[in-house]
Length: 454
Image (cartoon, rainbow, N blue to C red; front, side):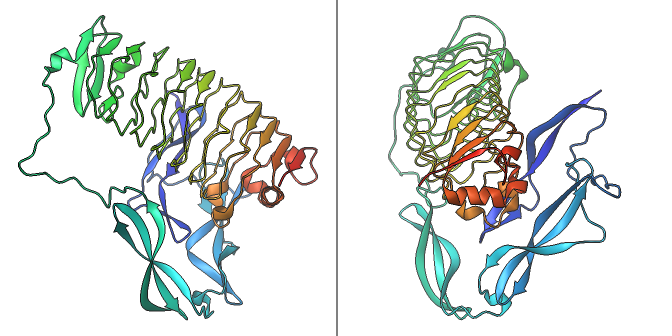
């Protein structure tokens, strides 16, 4: 028996500019490392392989609960780790440490006296929206004076609830469940409508019209392997006006060769996460009719669509999207992608967004704004044919102290020889060229071209 090995991703959360692990730790499968391994383990508790002397790989990682002080400034403390395979890492022996990036200038933790500073105090709800509340500190001591800080989330689940209205009802026409579907073939298909499981002996499946609050052919967490034989769906009569969650709706429908969603009303949808993830045989996705004004997550939306050659996203309004992680990851056959109209001013996570798009040659992201980004790790990793890239409005304000969130941005982009950007972003790339795996041609003194704008 042989195994395929994937990188393990560990879920973290952000607090006061520092990333922390969840307790207990949460993991999921990441980028493919390779296949054909005779042995492989997926247990997070398995101790890593101890590298021999003279290990091939070295890295510095940030210690989130320790720091150095220097002239009143607070700096992150970093420790050296070594590995012989770039997968399993252990601390260097004897241990080595160094000063990292600036954590806080003139920090009270380092003896500095900050006369006036607003610090996070708590989260509060105001008319259904979640805000940060801040408290004023004078010379490091809390004063008790509070103010409303930045907006965390509009219409937050933490601030809203549904209450039963006594004596009042909503009526709708009753239909037998057996009449909701028309059967026209065979193969067992499993799916969920409004949270209830169904099994159909039809291929394709046809749904009659009625408002649905949810519809998932993937059926998470009750996914059934027979769904991978589904080749087509007839959805032209379905009413999606009330659906807010389209997560995993068509995920892992590996045999689906075409999909018409032109009649879908997506105006109330808030999440499209993993919507088409794993639709391996669809060559065209026309999403030009989608209204995405309320969507806040497009993570993994079109990941692993291995035969996709054309995707139409002309109507997308992404002003409220905060997560685009792995949105187009591993779309190997996609030779062009037109997403420059995307409004990314709210996006915090771009990691792996275009990783593995190995047929892209040129990419125009000149209108992408990254001022709120806290993670761009591996954003273009594996774009092996990419020659030219426009990043006119890229800026990295929130990434200064988070090495893991800026790693491997350009790893495997060996043909990249022209980047259009601002001078500040070029300087950032050169400074972090080893961490972001900047191609040799684009490194300082390389043969590549930096076209400076703005």
